[in-house]
Length: 123
Image 1 (cartoon, rainbow, N blue to C red):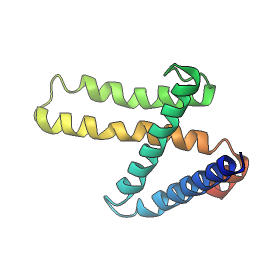
Image 2 (cartoon, helix red, strand yellow):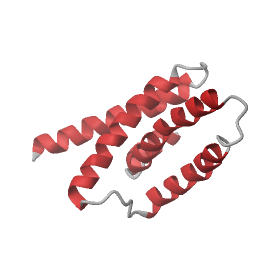
Image 3 (cartoon, one colour):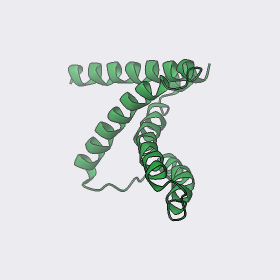
Image 4 (cartoon, rainbow, N blue to C red):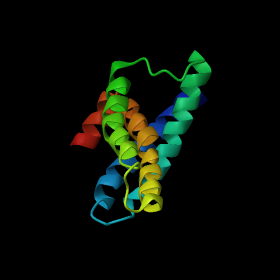
C-alpha cells in the first residue's frame, strides 16, 4: 500500500512538473506539444484506470464533465468545418491533431483536485 501511495505521489509530482513546464514552453512554437503529449499519455492511463474501476467510459464528476463539454465546444465546430474545407487533407490533419488535448486536459483537471498541486501550478 505504501508503494502505491509513493507511485501516486511521484505521478502527481511528474504531472505538476509537466504542467508548469508546458507553460514555460508555450513561448516556443512547438516544444510544448511534447509535454502535452506526455500529459495525454498520463491522461489515457488515468482514463483506463477509471474504466477498470467503473467498467464505464462515462465521466461522472462535474469537473470532468465541464472539461469534456468545453473540449467538445471547440472540437465539434472543427469537425463540422471539415465538410467545406478548401484543403481537406490539411484540415483533417489539424482536426485529428487536437485530439491529444482531451486526455491531457482531463489529467490536468484530476491533478488539480489536490489543493497543494493546484496552488503550486497557479502560484
